[in-house]
Image 1 (cartoon, one colour):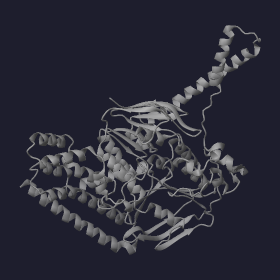
Image 2 (cartoon, helix red, strand yellow):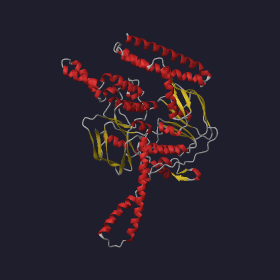
Image 3 (cartoon, one colour):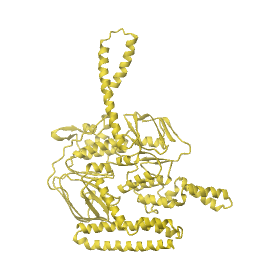
Length: 622
């Protein structure tokens, strides 16, 4: 079943043509990723499909009464509302059904209206709407429903926007970079959600593991043409290479034919027959085909790195808190030359704060950071590039010098450097504010790298970068000889470039894991399995109790009973983590007493909750 058809849409801003005469369709149950370079109009296409923008030509035709929801990159909400009030103020089919049912309850004389409203409540499972939206908000770490929108960060607003479109359960869901501002746990939950829910998707994302596991079709915009691949990201990569190889063969044949026809043209007399004129016309087409060049650039990053001495960075008993929130609690580490470390952890566990402390841009409460004399940090932050009003692209780079040193004693101009970063000469004289989000990030990355850092720190570098630029950045980082530290939720990126991880568990706990993200995920899954096996309250028992004698608990008791199992499992996980810290000797002598007290509190709380769980389960059985 066709949900939506895009017919020959075009869009330009002045002389700059974003795209021209694009056509494709979206059918029921498709999960489509739209792939293109930054600056080619991906977000504009999404806005046109969602009805927030209008194409210069062409049209978008959607099926009647189709329910479409759109998650844009920036969210706009009433700042005076709370999170829960915002949920109830949105257009949502289920909310309308609930209102219809409440209205029918008020007018009990109309039995037909009540029956219809009751059936709709059943059909759309509206009875459990409160449970559904609270579960989604909880998974996206938006547990405080009374928090006002004006108090939310940009990332929290993006997550609230995602929650709203997921709660809506539309026929077609359009997503613009849905994994931005999600931590790894949230991304993996979202993957599982889309695997379970029957939602038709059309999205732009740079997260290649997400592409791999969620999408069943990829549409690529390349050199103004659309290419469709019916498969996931691996299938797309394989078939794209085959397409390019075929294009190269055809281009070689066209060049050979062009040379042959060129010789014939040069030998022709001035008076030509009709047959000759026809061949001349064919020659023009051959010439155009033979001179076709892929506008394919590769960033060649051979920036000269200053020598790195034996002493890199030493961290001694670092302590950092924000009020009651502990970020670092006696953390110690001595960096070795050439280490490549990834940092992972839930949002709010202090990853960016740790980088600021490492680079001396934020104070610590206790301990020491000792930086070697030869260390020169290159720090790419989430804040992005700071430019003066009216500043042009080339002017940003020229602030660091007219020429940039490369390896082997070579030098290139600022303009040549920008070309290597995919900014052609025309684009170099554009105002920075006119660049797309991804292009600004690429310019910022360039500005960081040209300063010759030998200790490179990247805080979420993959946000807003297209897949092409990501591949280029990865290839550079694989050859980068200095120290590297990366915070990223892009699992594909982390797997490719880091050798070990700092895992931020929260409450000041940081674990050093020897391996990449996939290694860590395998380890965690095996650990979770062990925790589940040792948890006193088994899920099987819970399900049996839930499905027998249902309805003998009060509403509040049912809610309490539903959360107890999760609470007990979380406490068991915390217990195992601290017990492992005692076993491997990672707790410093001065912290042993505090950790012992913390462990006993967890054990006591777990036992209390287990007793309450059994009390409620017995009430159900009775």
